[in-house]
Length: 474
Image (cartoon, rainbow, N blue to C red; front, side, top):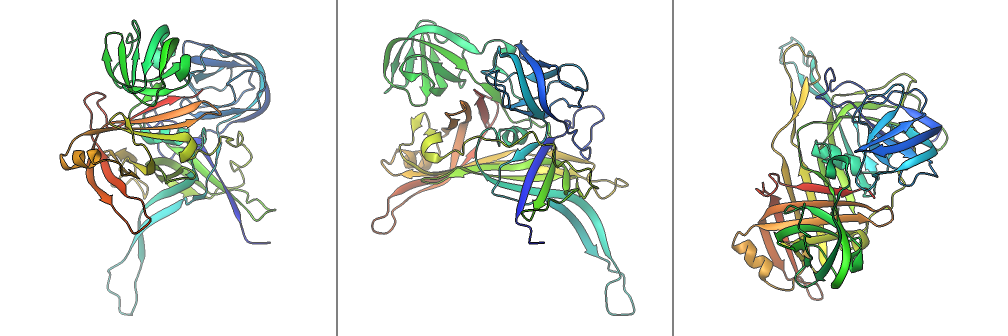
């Protein structure tokens, strides 16, 4: 048998810890169904699937539907609304999937295969040597004091592969725009767009919109543009985002779903399987109660956007051959996102021109609670102060940004990640950031002069949070 040269990482979301009776160490319920002929109907924020054979699904699990050919938008990841063993399966309706309906034949499962470039999940123990004195040279015992599981995932960013990891890191459910009704907040408004001023002018266009809402323009020269509303006046919106000059076009505005950081930990059961090209390990190691502690994404001057996540959980087990292997609902097939085609950065409402690097770091600062008589594992994992920080660099073209650093001014920062193929978008809005440090490096001969800065996100009164994640799923 040759050396093991391949591993596959699979994840299934467990019950939320605030659900009555659930605990960090409870494994996820795993379902896998193939070739199911179903009927799909959406109404008032709920997608109802009837015709499935009996199988257990837990509320707030992520399920992946694949293989469908008839119902547009059905091959995707969804969140289960209510526990299900028999009868209809209900799912939350993401933005853009209102009204989907029809009959189809699908595969569905709650175990997700992760695309990754590297991972490290396993048990971690705290031990100390006994200090008891003995008449011979040596140590009497090595005392195991605490146990946990830790993990990390490195990958290249793609949708939907990492969207649920982002969601889990934020520890909050999505606020679905419109509460299950249409998320269109302006319909067929005759609008004039100024690219220089970044304004949209039209009678009543400001209705149903709040400052720092994220909307997508539908119609006209800016069809598909995703912007953040930064100021509102009668019949006028000022936005952050690239817009084109447009005169007297009928446009609609669709509001994105919204998520702010919370404190409801959503743990996952994580399994790895190993292969030497022929033999798959049976009873692959599993880590249980794994929650994202850190999450970051970054990109340089060119190439793929990379992501890193760090996880903390209850324990690792090496089960008997009743493994999760073979119950995956299939691989994610999203395109890998690149900085040149799929990412944009704005600072204080203005495009940075030519960004040469960016990193966003999100840290939950998870904390283990241990007590007498509870065993080696933590009785609970809780959250402490959230930290959101990062850095960016860009070609140096004026001293404006550096002067704002010297003056200790607040900035706003908006990052958009967009996959045109699937229509999925994630917008990270940091309404209030300050520079921890900044510089204008003039390097050696034939090197570009760049402005670079490290920043921290602070609580904004506009949104009562340090960061807001907005999303369109189609």
